[in-house]
Length: 499
Image (cartoon, rainbow, N blue to C red):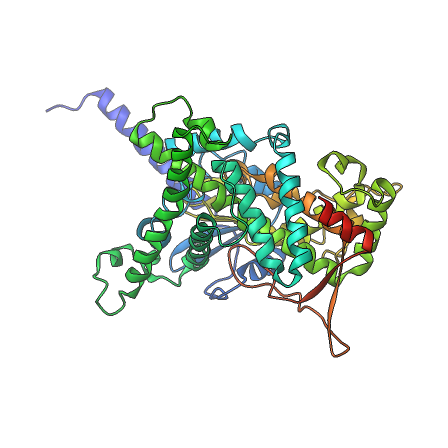
């Protein structure tokens, strides 16, 4: 069969394009980075920060052959993760957490190119995607935070539990219209158990489970040596399904009985006949509220109480502002926010000083890319290292110092960079509940400062200072610490009880 001139021309064009593509890859090096160094087992973001200072804003490492790209500059992270978000927004496939433990349908683990991801994001955005949308729920936030103050007055030693229960109560009301019971709520209990397991599984997804690196292991029987992870996964799977099924079925029954309160569930369910697929999507979207919202809010509020214990001069300055603007006969509300600039700056410093997700969440590149002259291979894991972005000495003066005033302009000195430009993530993976978290954490800070003094705990006349250290994990939580939390006066004590 004769080859025509057109065939030759097409073949030449294909060869030219292939040569150009491959030579283009050869002409552009991988980003610089350390060679053959093992990753530290915990708090990898600290090592990433060192490498960012040494090698530059884009660092490449190889972990068991997997290319990992670390970004240490907001401008670079924005250019790659937002402006090129169409192919920088997928997630790694987590065999243990996603496939085996049943979490693959939750929004944080969804692949960005899938239809379910887009629909979940849209539906959540309609409810809480803007400050104006979140403002509809200010009264709910205020009521739940007043309940938190009462619980702290009664049981100040249970700070962590009280913070978590309040965050859970807000999320369950928003997601399902569900009001938790004051003690031992069964829905909250199963959700809390599931989220504890989810946190553990995602924390360990970087290598503690070999199945994440060798997916074929998921087919081995649980009784075989090395198959113990499958027994763990089976238990976690039961819990993850209960987490989405129990509150969903409870809300469905209330809707049928005409007892349902307005919520994300009713917004998407009322007056509609959903297919099995759509109902399953709604179930996991509602579950995603809790997965994405509670642990991060708990971390930030816990950090606030730690900071007030360690930096009493900041606490006094914030209380002086609240006393001057609001007085002592009522609690702050969301309507007061614009009139409390130092409290606002304190919130910003909480987000900056100890970022909730210090290492940033992982993005996966779905096609080869050239950025700033460097070759970024398809399939690379990309992390915007939030710790470095928020502690960069080129951006923040004395970054290790806790100083809310850095966010208040003084004379010719402008405010330093708002941490929100990176503390909630980037692009299509930015936290969909950022306005919810921003509002609820601010309110907790303002109300707590208005009525409580937080101080170092004393034992036999000796101060027991917190270590200030944080536990390892995807989401940063302070090491357990003791502090004294007492009403500022008899008047504030009465104010808490009167609410």
